[in-house]
Length: 130
Image (tube, rainbow, N blue to C red; front, side):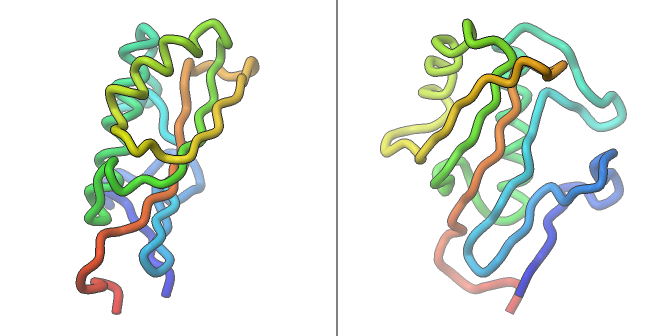
C-alpha cells in the first residue's frame, strides 16, 4: 500500500510533489531546502539554510513516525563545492553514527545553497496504513 505524507495537509508544497511517500516501512522524502510555510525559500548563511533544511526533513519524518535516526540514505546537492567541508561538519552534528549511506554532489545551477532528500526505514510496530 502506498501512503502520501504531508506534515501540514492545509499547507501542501507549492510545487507538484508529495513531501514523502511511504511504501511499507520505507519512506521516501522529497528534496528539502531552506523554506518556511507562507514564505517559500528563505535565503540565509550556509549554516542557517542547512539547519532549516534539516528541520524540514525532521518535520516530514515525524509526520510518518520516524526521526533522523531512521534515515538509511541521504542525497545532498550543494550549490558551491567550497561548502563541502562545512556540510560535512554540520552533517555529523545532525546525523549520528552509524551514518546513513550518502551521495553529495554539486548543483551549480541552484538558487539554494543546499537541498537534501532521504530514505528512511520506519520503526517496527503497527502499520498505520494496514
